Each structure stands twice: as C-alpha cells, then as structure tokens.
View 1 (cartoon, rainbow over the protein chains, first blue to last red):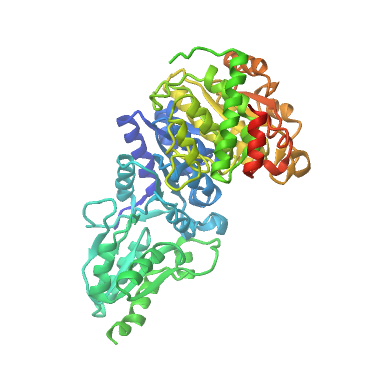
View 2 (cartoon, rainbow over the protein chains, first blue to last red; view 1 turned 90 degrees about the horizontal axis):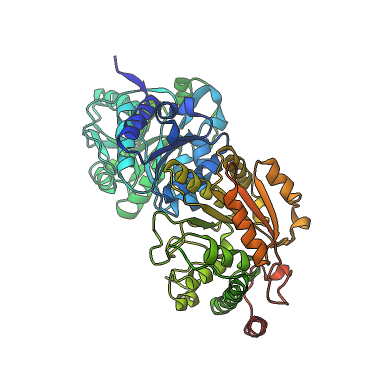
Length: 313
Length: 273
C-alpha cells in the first residue's frame, strides 16, 4: 500500500523545524491557519506568527514590509486567494521588489473537491508565472513538499509553492530534489509525459499500462515551473517527438504553456495538453472530478495512444 | 544620526527649495505629478529634516526610521527631499523618468533611501505595517512613517491595513494623509467622498491629529505628539492645497499628472524664488 499523506501537514511541520533553526522566519496567514497548517508554527512561535484575518491583500503587502526589514516571510492561504485575490500586491510589493516572501498556497486544483469552483484554483500557476523574479514549485508529494519549503527558505527571492488539499500518494524512487531541475522518473522513447503535482501519480499509472501495450513512455516530474528545466524538455522532444503535458490546472498559462513556449522556439514537436479546458470546476469527490475533467490516468493513456502515430509520419 | 533641528523658518526655506527642484525636474522629465508633490512638500521637508532618524550616507543603517511613500506618483517630491538630505547628488534629479535612471517614474528600490516600490495605490500602509511589526518583533525602537494620498484611501486595501495596524497596536507607526481634496478626475467629494475622515480613522482605532499641512509649527507639533502615543497608531490628517506654492497650480485638478511647460515652469520658479 502506497503511503498517503497531506502535503500541508508536512508544510506545517517543516515550518516549525525552520522556525527553530532561523529566528528570522516569520509566518503569516489569513484566517485559514488550521487548514494550511501554519497553526503548528503559530503554536510554537507565537511571537513570529501573525494572523491577518480575511484580508489577503493586506497580508501580501505587509509581508513585503517585513521582508524589507530582513525577515524571511512564509505566508499561506488557499491558492485561489493567494494568486487571485492579492495578485497586484504580489506583483508590485513582492515580485517587483524581489523580496524574500514565500507564498505557500494550499488547496490548489480541482481535487479541492466538494467546496466547488470558487475554491478550485485552476489559474494560479498562470497568474504567478508571468511575474518577473517569481520562482514556482509544485511539489509532487508530501516528502517533496519539505524539500520545496527548504529550498525556498535557502534561496533568496519570492516563491510560489503550490500544495493540494487532499492526501496524496508518495512517489517512489524519484531521487534527490534539486530546485530547478526536473526528475526523470521513467525512461522511454516512444513518448514523454511531463507532469506536475498530483498528475505525476496519474501519469505513473498510465505509463505502467502503456508498457503493457508495448509503448515505452518517458515520465518526467516537472516540480519546478520557474525557472523551467528547458534542457530536459528539449531532450524529451528530440528523443521522443511527442510530449503529453499533465497538470491539475487550466491548459492555458500553466505547465503546458511553459513547455509549448520552449519547444515552439527550439524544437517544435506535438504537445498534447491534459488539463482543464475552458471550464470552471464544480463540487464532487477528487477522484470523480479527475474523471469528469479528463485528468485521470486513463485520459493520459489515451492521449499518448491517439497521438503516437503522428510522430512517425 | 542626530541632525541639527531646523527652525520653522529654515524648514520653510528648505521646502521652497524642494518645490523649485520639483518644478525643474518635471520640466526636464516632460511628465510627472506636480500637484500632489507640491501639496505634501512641507510635510515631507519637516519629516526628513527634523523627525526621521536616518543616516543618508548609510541608507541601509539597521536602526533607521523607515519611511514609505504609498502615493508613489509623488516621488519627485521624495527624490528632491532625498537629494537635499544627501542621499545622492542633486544632478541625479534631472535624470528623472529617463531610461536607466535611479529615479524611476514611480518609486523603485534602485533609489538610495527607497525601501519598497510603490505606484499601485493602496498598498503602502500595509507595507508600513510589516515594517512596524518587524520593529516590534526585533524590539527595535525605530519608527515607521508612511505618506498616503486622499484619493488613495478609496482603495479597500487601505482599510484592511487600517484595521490591522490598530489590531496589532502599532504605536510605532505614523501615517500622514495629504488631504488636498483632489484626485485625477476631479474633487474627491465629487468622485468618491472620503469624509468624515477623522471619524473614520478614529472608528478604526487610530489616534487622529488634524492640522494645516502647510504650517510648519503645526506639522512639527503633530510629529511630536505622534511619538507620545503608546497604544495605537497615529494618523496626521493634513489639510493641504494641491499644487501649493505655485498660484496657477493651486487647487487645479489638471496639474495632478501634467508637467509644466517651459513658460509655466519659468513663472512657477519666479513665484518660488
């Protein structure tokens, strides 16, 4: 049985570890600390935790003020609000200033589930990716969440780290986490599946089924969206000729768009996007929603199979 | 770094020189915002010459008082004051708004003395709040000052911050509201009424001081009083005249964001001689 963990549990615990190591770390939240798990830090270090209430814009700009005084600020709210509600504050006060503010957004994507469309951020990667200076990590599982938080703490500048709400399976044998360097999980030259977040696990299942059918698909965990590991993408494009990009996000502006931009410029190949297409989310259970929005392993498998012949033209 | 305090008369002389620089810079730049720069000139002159604990040769001195200009479009005023205090050479002022200049059209951290960018209105009180919280956390005694525009407080973010500054008892924070009554599209009262100002800020838990923002004695008394308030943040609501000091700009909405022509600049400098 694969280990299932909450990324945000690991986030909360990691913050406590970091807080003990570095007195400069300050944590902010906007009335969601029990959901984002920043309450663990609040309990240990009440003097370095500030709850801003339901006021994300104020929290973002205040984070900039704290960072201007030398603090490393971690702040959390749901992804819909972190990226959407306070975007201008992130742009002008955080990103433009290149301040040490680490936005750790939880409850991203369709698998937020029953709360429905308003709470299912499907645009957040797009919104953050266009900001100069912004670094973006989408950890694949709970252990990698710790790696991402540690990397953000060590590296100067603004970060957006995207976490989910639901428990996620731990992906085995992915090797060491290196910020900005994608992980090759499965070798293969018939097609390359590039995924981030929970979609890596869905893709893994697809890769196994494809192998049974004699299709050797490569699988890449693109945990860092910015800076993007262009080298591994171009290698995959050259060696397989077919990229299938999977993300729990709108197909516009996120990981698929990032990859489109790289291959269009340097090595045009067919890129199939597995993501949410011109729809808002809705209420449902995570597994139901993944099927409804065509984000399941079966959808990934079909995307590879239907597009395979193209590259052999 | 203790600076020899100026008298009200000396502050007025300095403010006049700063107003002259604003006109000259904007003429050179060919664009920019004279109205709100001139209205807050007395408030800023008193602040930088007589109030702030700063060291212009070491802009990053950790013990410095923090100042942030939330109404970023009035940065010509800020730049003129910084140059007069010795943060950078005066000739730099005439690179305002030029490619590669340390003096951008709206505040940028490239400028010595600028702590944080601004230009999108409504965020600066929150930035100041963060600075205030950092001081409290580190048990430092530096104070935080932030200049707000009156049109600017139509932004919702201001009121989120106003609530939070009181909630966190930020007595080390002093906001200065340049209440010149004008915004781009007209008089504030016609575009989006902001009164009753004092009652609003009091209701949000602030200590409110109302002054004439062109009277140096009232300005200094307000800064002095703000330092004595120990349980809540202070706001100085300064009634000012947009374009103050240049007769044909005073109260004229059109000079919010338009540089003077050469002829207008000549007349303005004559009046400010």
